[in-house]
Length: 110
Image 1 (cartoon, rainbow, N blue to C red):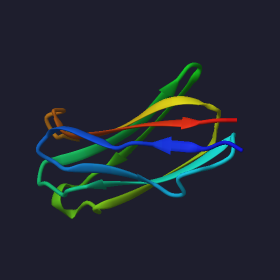
Image 2: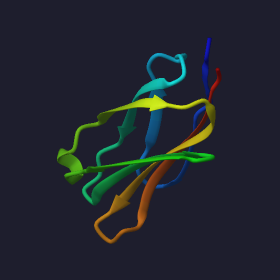
Image 3: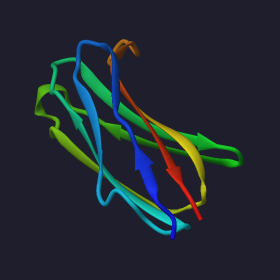
Image 4: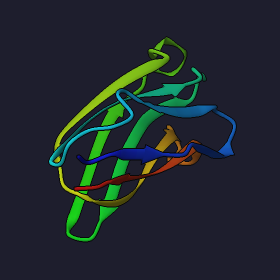
């Protein structure tokens, strides 16, 4: 039975960004349903969530409307194959600068 193992780490910028997985384990091909929480800031314009492992790459971009943007953004990725991954959630400003970033390594096993 595959497991999704995760550890959270936040990096850089002024905006607080966190990632939470629901549920913490899954079968390959895995369904990853997770929440990215972003502290609303006036200049937040884009949330980019991406992961890479071997031959698998996935990117989701979500537009942010500054302070009016939701605090919680749910992402649903299906058919994620077994592998070791690094999930990155990055918030960009209107000037394309990094406002905040969170990293979460995880493993989907067979």
